[in-house]
Amino acid sequence: MPDFESYLAHLNKKRRYNIRRNYRLASDAGPEFERYRTVTDGERAMELHRKVNERYRSPTYPWMRWAMANANMVDAVWLAVDGTLGG
Figure 1 (spheres, helix red, strand yellow):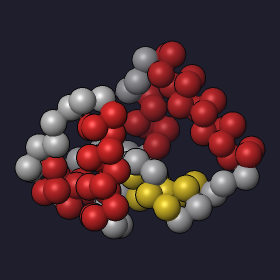
Figure 2 (figure 1 turned 90 degrees about the vertical axis):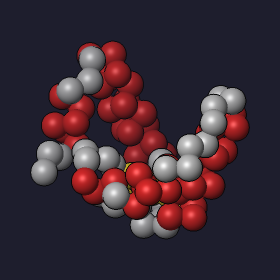
Figure 3 (figure 1 turned 60 degrees about the vertical axis):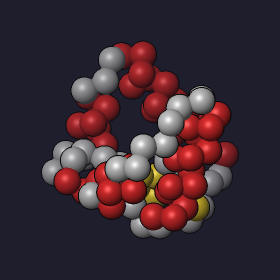
Figure 4 (figure 1 turned 180 degrees about the vertical axis):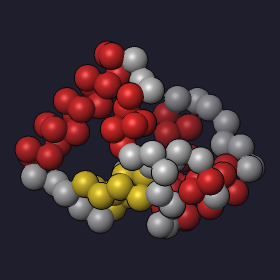
């Protein structure tokens, strides 16, 4: 399975820079980040997904719960900040 650096390698230079910078800034600020290959809390993930979609006026698709439950089948990475799912 690819690791986080392999994922970043597929992004353009600006996106890689921003992700690394934001990760470093957040790490320096004190919260603890954890990476997961699977969704650890399906209900929280769906709530987060709905809120993001509301913010950007996008629909929430009915298959999204299935996609989250099977995220380990693709190169998905879920982040938790201080034990709380972040995206």
